[in-house]
Image (cartoon, rainbow, N blue to C red; front, side):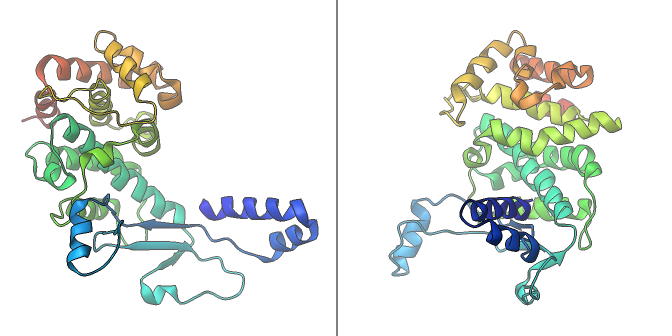
Length: 296
């Protein structure tokens, strides 16, 4: 966790100048792990105009949703501050809270943002209102992600899915699909691919997650379904685009990116599902692929 990483850094830096100080920190200080959760859209002209109208001089105003979560490991060396009075949660299970957020919220963002970008849908809220993407989010997350997420004292995975659905659907939060779909080479292996591995290990469904991976491969080709161009949206865009174009005729090329998929190319259930979905997307369109998945 982040607290453990901070401990390592501080102890190591102290050791460079004062080994005794480093030893004292190691023995006497605590570095609680923590996580935060609050959707913060990118600043646009709208937000700058809002603060200007309020008479505030701020070139980069920050707006956010009305949901905030701060979870802190209950590990303090000199008494615990009363941050719980302001809504913070103290727990010995920060990892479980973080896992729920990463798999369901961050993963859920990818489930709708990638196809949303392909379908020229501008915001996350609009994705959730879409007749296909809203149900896609619910089915993929409830059937393929949530089963591998532990409940935490305050909420079950299923109830958290409902909460995230409500948060994503907030019309006051103008969060763009482009922002959320950005940096897929980091977000896909961090947020969704672990659920694919869990599904394969536990013999639970992974077809929806494979569909999202196929959608990402299609997105990285660089055009939306209406023919408009997708501007580079990843630090490794050139490599991804080359792979995506090659994958149109040879889907296995996409899964050969070991830095993203590891050995998943050798998992027939996933590889075959990915190939099937990518073929359907290219031949019949993303809408049709989602309809097949949703059985409508």
